[in-house]
Image (cartoon, rainbow, N blue to C red; front, top):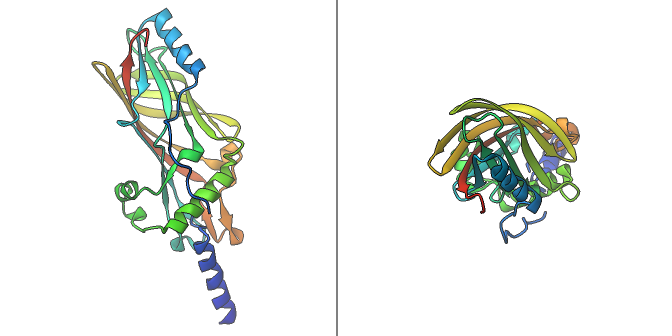
Amino acid sequence: MGQSRSFIALVFVALLLGVAGCASPPPLTAAVKETPSLAAEYAALQSSQGGRRYGLDLKASSLRIYVFRGGQAARLGHNHVLSAPEFSGFAWLPARGTTGGRFDLAFRLDRLEIDNPQARAEAGAAWSSKPSAADIAGTREHMLESLEADRYPWLRVRSLQLSGELPKMAAQVEIELHGQTRSVWLPLMVTEQANRLTANGALVLRQSDFGIRPYSVFGGLLAVQDELVIEFTLVGNGLSAGG
């Protein structure tokens, strides 16, 4: 019985330290800005080949990352949802069709918002628990530590190839994370109306594929699953050739 009580005490100490996830998130000041080289690259693309260039509309766009609890004591932890309130990017489509179209997206990992109440409510019953402020702070600390966000602060996505026809498309993308790059295919639902482009999609990302060791304690008794689910709605507004 004494050993059992000690074990339970260890579990609850871990939870209090934020294992299910002790620093506060950095304040959100100015929005993340695209690099001048990328902006110039897309402007040059539109100038030389025509078509239409789009800049991301932050207020209309959303990107969420779903993190799952794992281990034998998973029921004592929380699932998490991360939101990217700040990100930047461009898309370009040629004048006819989509062949040769491309897009880039980037956001800083240290700007991710952890367990926004509305995002948790919209995620479903598996996110119905209510992590405390200490849990959320601990989740942020361990997440940034695992990702080595001080060395690799950015997650970047760059399209390599687009196939299909609007609105059903497939995109081969290159993902840069933790100093490594991987290529994956993902389905997209893309609509183009007047001066507005909308893309909806999702993908599964395995942390270990990027050299990241998912967070765990007590030999994996409490852990974060390797697989992450990323869902996004990206909305772009058309930019003029000189804009």
